[in-house]
Image (cartoon, rainbow, N blue to C red; front, side, top):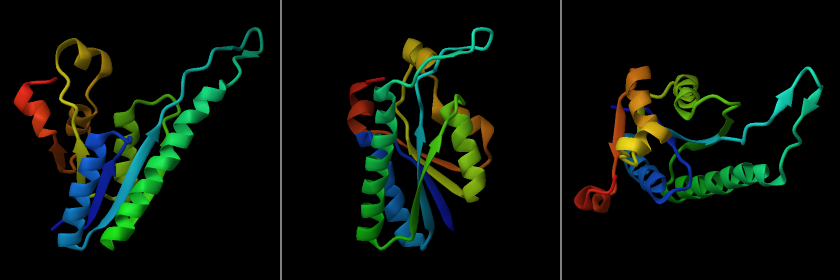
Length: 157
């Protein structure tokens, strides 16, 4: 049914759960997979009138190192499951995560997206936004959203 499954991952337990579930689906459907990590960097101060660009902070490289580690883990999971999978780190360049993922979905020609939803509500959702909700609005590709049963049962949002 599905031949190209995309899974956004960020290294969180929920994202890795979504990756494992997507691997199970890919195995059953003989589908190709791609795990995508969106690398977000801290904004820099730029003043063109003074020719000033704030230097990159060494901690900013942490995002790239995290992406490498998480994507290495995804490759290992693909190999253990004998799944044809690829990984991709995409720099957001200031775009929102949902915008970057929408482009990744198109680039990979995904016909299914499997992702974890943190299920934020109220002020947390307003401030952090909802990537899954944005993708529901901005793409026509089916989304399989997973939640941790403990979060649902306790009502953590």
